[in-house]
Image (cartoon, rainbow, N blue to C red; front, side, top):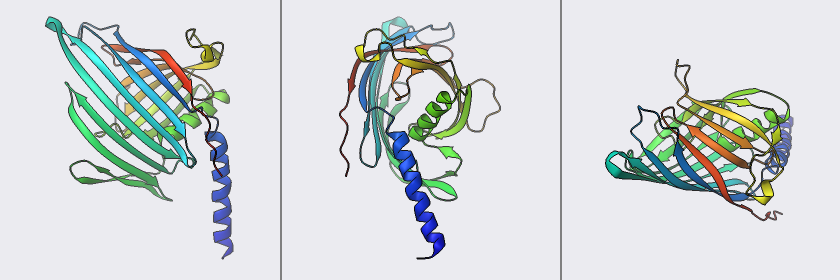
Length: 264
């Protein structure tokens, strides 16, 4: 074995250990949030709406599995209703080099979507494929983060006292625009406002406003913004999504800590 290969393998093992330590700081858990459409503007086509989302993040021996299912019933003019269902699942390894995803969606507004895919980082680029009725190749620059990788770095930025953290992030549930510029504005650490879930009472959280922009845009206004309270273990205590002409407010209703896995 050449010295260059030995150094390369040593670095990979070292990085793997660091990433496992950081990843282990995230809490495996299930959460159910009730959703309510609020602050509807005059230019919106909505009159109201309610829903629910089920979220699960679970550590395994190689990385993280995430699953999110949601249903929203939109209230339209003339007492009409429109339903939207979505099931989205992902896997991301500890190194932040592999990410797979699957989406199944049925919406009155966007029709039906069903696809799966994967992306992987090498020394130069991120490449992969998305599969629906055909196979489409994906290629991106390497300076893009995967979602869990971004979450871990955002928490570390908050811990270190940073107030602004901006990165490009890949999202597999955005099939027409996979890459978003994500700007997070981090508030000062404070006690959680959550009172209904015993586990969350008194926990310290960061209030964060996260703005999402298209990758290639000159507009100063984001596509949408999320206001959330998140703790050091990655648990979102409360959140609100602002789409401009209406908002979706999420309230945590049920919470369960998942048991730790045993990896040899």
